[in-house]
Length: 290
Image 1: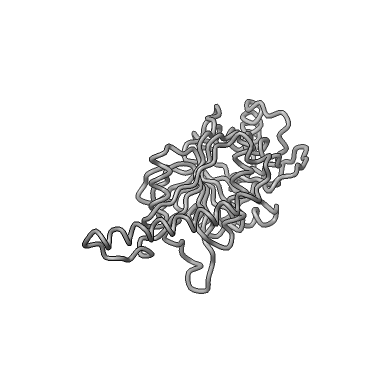
Image 2: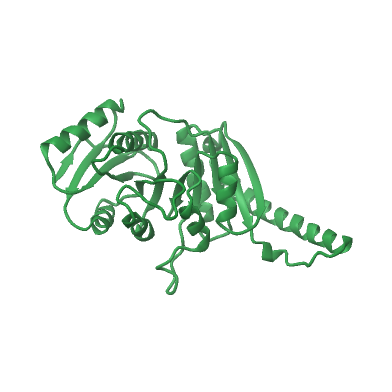
């Protein structure tokens, strides 16, 4: 069953947003977060419930949406029975969803979402961007501080561009692009002053190279999206994923933006280690860009 409200579209990279909902104590805050974000992105919202439709369920959803105060919200409610992973992934494809929202719990030995362990499969297989929300709220908490992965990759430019669009729409005033540099790139054995100086010079060289690359990307970001945002770059030497996750936690970031894992014939069933670290112990809300 599909319940459709009036729909309209705006110019946005996220034209279609979806959230999987369960009738649990987090239903209202999850709906509130999804409704606010959808309106701020200029998108339309699909609320996906894996289960049978009922008048009571529809009434609860409409009540919570009405309480959000988002009068311009365009949304549809989709009820489907079946395997939760397959239902959500199929709906994402059918509705051309650009961004899927999932509620998540922080600091677990493994990540649990609103549907439990199956959400790990959803995140792994989703063909769209995914936003993991660690602490959904009925009343909005401002997003003031964003950390974005600047790790060199084929899709990093798009990830940074999207991050600035999101920061602009959310009214974020601090954005730090983190360039993770693996320590093995500085493989000099330090055992005296000369080798220490050599290692330091190599680190500085790598930092300058990374900053030059990121600054080139920044030069192509629309000025409107950078307006009123304090922009910093930060090079970090350490283990990919763990380093940026730890940094986001230390600086109390409200949102961490990461590249989606790239699939290959051998690794497509597994998360790369950098994203695995993030998912094992979510430092904050995480936006994974595809």
